[in-house]
Image 1 (spheres, rainbow, N blue to C red):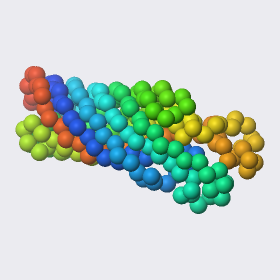
Image 2: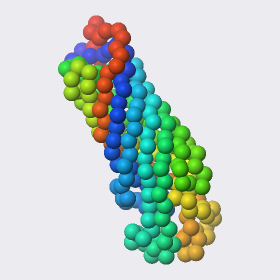
Image 3: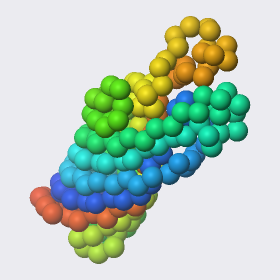
Length: 214
């Protein structure tokens, strides 16, 4: 049997996160952490066992982009810029790669991955109400019997090309400079949030099941 233990214990946490957010789209086609802005929020997490959790969160992110910071000629000719506030409600499933529980010295840390569904409101977008798919990875560790902390890198895949308010072009004419100065309809916008967080255990039910290992 492995020295790793499983848990029948269910518990719940409250947490706060803060970090930086940035946009990927027609004004930033691939440079990570370009035009970094503030982001943060609060979350509630229900831990079903040492591996699986469900999280509900409210997250604020500010996004911006500016063609004048690009190295591409068609972008500087276009000369567009934008800034918008993103208000996001999200539900996410989380999987720990190692068994983990706040306050247990046998499970002091783990890396994890998450995936979920978000509803967002982009304050300055032409179509402000959208959905997105959040996904990412993180690392968390115990501080005390009730406290934990960590860092998380997440991406949001949206289903709109207009967070930046550029009109999309649907056909092959995108390769023409006049239409390329607009945007490409099939390249949907993304945004990312890298954040540090702190978590406080507010509820615990059941006990650790040490009758078997895995």
